[in-house]
Length: 283
Image 1 (tube, one colour):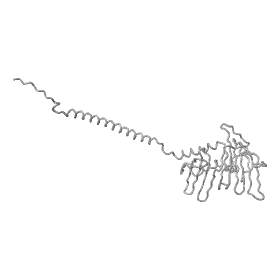
Image 2: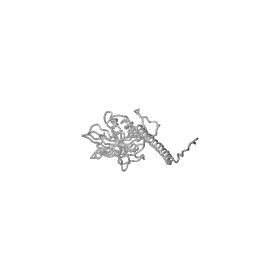
Image 3: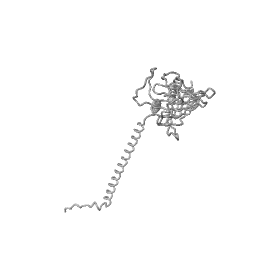
Image 4: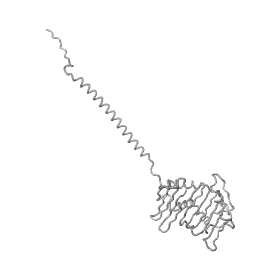
C-alpha cells in the first residue's frame, strides 16, 4: 500500500506569524529612521561646535597699545588739517594761566607751495588765536604763511594798554614756541608725547564717553603714577574736546566751549592796528 505525502497548511499552524513579521519589519523601519535622524542631529551639533570654535579662533586679539594710540593720534592730526574756529576755557594752562582761548585755522589745500620768508622758514595756511586771561591780560598770535603778528596787553592798570606788531618773518625759537601754546590741539598733542618715556605706548587706557552736545567721545588716559594722570578726549572727527593733567601738586585743563567750521577774515586780523615790530604775546 502506497501512502501519499500529506501537505501541511502552515498558515493554519501559526495564524499570527505573518502579522508578527509585518510588525517586526515596521519596527525595524522605524529604528532605521530614528538612527538616521539621530545621525543627522549629531552631525549638526558637531558642525555647530566646529563653527563656533572657528569663530572664536578668528576673533581678533586685543589691539596692542601702540596701535590704539597711533589711531588716536592720527585722528587728531587729521582734524588739525581742517578749517575751524574753536573756543577753549583753560585753567592753569602753562604760562598763560586761566582764561579763554579762541583759535582759528584755515590750512592750505594739499600740494600748496609754501612761502619762504627772509629767514628761510617756509610755511602756508592761516592760523590765529586770541587769549583773554581772567586777570585782564590779553594776547593774540597770527600766522599767515611764513609771517607772524602778535598783540599783547599787560594786566589792567594805569599803564595797561595793548600793542600789536606788523607782520614779521616767523623764526622757530623758544620764544615763538611759547607763543604757540595758545594753539590748543597742537599743545595737547605735544603734552601727550612728552608725558613720560614711551608715554604713548605704556600705561594707557582708551574709553568711550557721551557728551550731550558733542556726541560720542574717545578718551585716552595716560598714567605715570597714581597721582600723575593725563586724559585727552576727542570727538568723532578728532577735534580736542577735553584735556586734563593732574599730579600731586598741579592740575591743568582745556575744555571746548564753542566750535564752528567757518573761520573768516576777521579771525586773522590784529585786535588793533599794528604799530610796531613784532612782540611775543605775554613775554
